[in-house]
Image 1 (cartoon, rainbow over the protein chains, first blue to last red):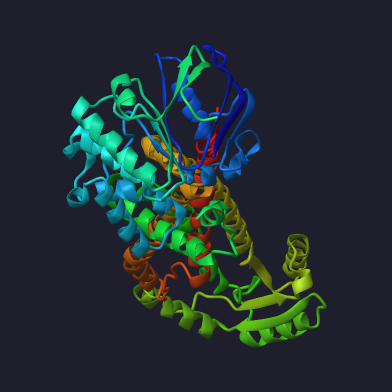
Image 2 (tube, each protein chain N blue to C red):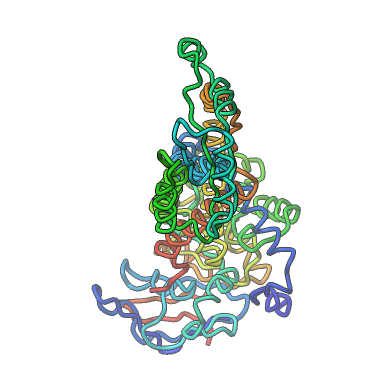
Length: 222
Length: 321
């Protein structure tokens, strides 16, 4: 489902963020991506979401080679990859419902399907009753769950999360990770960047460790 | 399941999903208008600026149009009025008129007897008291001379006048068309100025719309970024801004139409009063159907082009670094 082949990413101002990273993840696999701050976790996820392109090497997602994907196809790639951010990236002036509906609106789904699917996604994250609230009325944990609902509402086969619990306390973090487990159970491929090592250890999943842009440890898989 | 996902991942073509395409446009058109009305004050100000800008050339057009109509009513007046010597009798004048009718450059000669002239003069009003005082008819016989169209150039008219003055019965001539020609030239000038002004103000509208849309794009930067993250196409993101430009143009055009129509309505009364002083009637014509169409079409086009320029400069779509 996800394949990195000798991927390098160099920023003109920061130097090498990723060097010679290669790995492969199967369909339905769940994995953690750990490492110190600035090790390249975010860069790796940004490459997968096509927020950046690699300087060298191949990134293949869902059989699509992202290096050669034309610009016009980027939106259609992103619809296949749900992204979750540390700062949630919600629209503050829109209701929870509208925030979650955004990927479906953008994809041009009929109105009645949007309502049904948004409520299903909100139900999955336990926020069905808050659909009319604006994000500012929600707690951090709730806001992140809105972010997750938005990421899964279009049922993408791949979910990426960049420090999803970076701003949350341990109990809320655990809840969020349990949510991820549930998506894993229904066959979604997940890659979660985190430095919450205690949580990672408690949930026996494959773990990649990055150090200074190099993949130094891969706990399992192939 | 994988197959279904693969299908969904394909970019939907225009012909494959016309329903989606149509729905998204319709939604965007309505949503954009709603957004404009959510902020009535800034929207109103932008629309007012566009409306006022467009109303100026439109008003000039209406002005020249009306003046042209008015001048059209005078086209039948005599080209040259030949005033005969005061002593010339009506019968002698008729002989002169017959002679003139034989001249090749003259199409028609109309004799205005002293009595007719006096009656016409009386009809003009305001002179009854003066005429009472004079007792005798002070007016000479006048021959209204219409030259052939080919001979109505300024040079030929000059030659004709000289020839007429050489007649023993002639006193003096007056060219009735010269001032009309001058008037036409002035109208042409005003109309050219209106066009030029229209061009300049059109550029102004372009800049106003462009700048308004640019600010809106900057205000919604965050929203645009998030939409790109969840897979919005460049076209989807641009669409509401382009429609906003069209709405600004349409509303501005309607405002211009309203302003000009209102001005015509307000001016009708004073113009009627002025016309009545000349014993005449003059209904002002406003913007006709064609002119209204031109105003609305050009305002919509200006709005669209203005927003298109802004969108092209500030929205380049998802661009990975």
